[in-house]
Length: 187
Image (tube, rainbow, N blue to C red; front, top):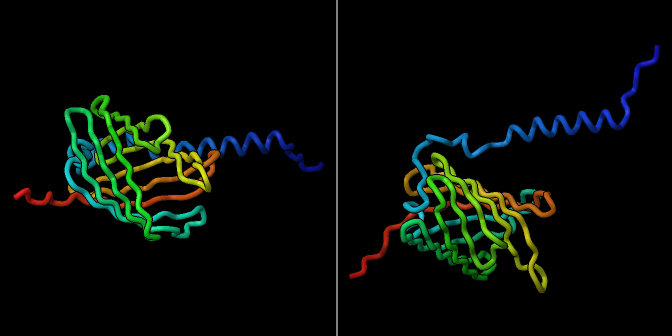
């Protein structure tokens, strides 16, 4: 008796089942419920901060590094974060975020180079933030999707990992380390 060969439809169904199973293994924001130190965006992004980061291409090679000097301020449930980037190639960039706290866990945000609104959910020590960014490309821009995960690892230090996607494919990654700094004396 000849062994039975499985057709392409059965192989495709098995592959889709495996992908569904693996997709279910991805981290969920609720996994961080109750973890300490608790991340409150209104507290962490209030005052001066500094951050350092790298950009990696899809192969993992570092393509650029940067420093960001920031100042955040909140008025109730509305916040503004001014970011001034200094890139390793000597270029500079400014982004100003406006955030709104919708409820105990959910936020939306806008910035000049963000397409539409960014959406985020905070639980425990983590924030999951998603948005489309218009990146400079040749003589125009190209829209990429960013899937950000931020974790408060101690009261003044936050780690951010952003996966960059285009057409659903991972094209790069950004890693950033934030630190709160003392506000300069006004005297």
